[in-house]
Image 1: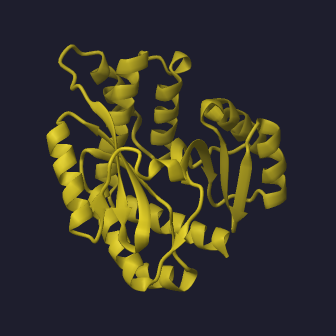
Image 2: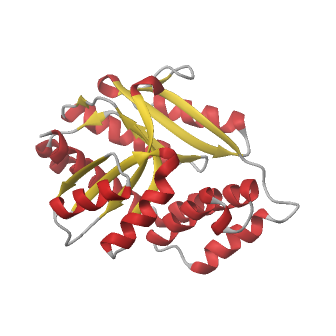
Length: 249
């Protein structure tokens, strides 16, 4: 089933990211600094910063690291980062979106293009695949005792558009401009903090991969996520449970 495999995909990526904790903290810090520099250091009046701080906390990022990242944004010598979206194609005809924050556009473009080409993919022009995705707000609860039915009701009452649940994991999506309001209302109703609250590119349709293409794609995504300039990688891939178990072995 599509939903079942999708959650296996989520857990695989989460496990891979957990192994890169120091790199993850660096990327979270960069997002906090950029958000604070653009909209001010007060999370109460800066929704992007509020979401960045919330996401950092759910990843167990130390409070001191968060404070340093915010303070860094107010210094006159703070780095200037450009937000750039790259698009391309991965193994098996998958569509890939890469979001980056970089202080060197040439380096970022070269490194990302290399990660694509060395792993059976190729970069495309801006807009070449993003039309296959929607930019939405995503809220994820993990290891939850809340039933799928109860979460569905709470999410809709909070203003969400869709809920998918499996084995205690709930993925809630909403309009991107409503993410902060929906996440705040939902956490209050659920009585627990979400594991992740962020804006994402959600594929309109997915491509199911076999073992060979799935293996190459995961290597490509790992290579992209290892790059300091890359913040997030999104794709329209779907991997069957039996193949995902082989990848996760």
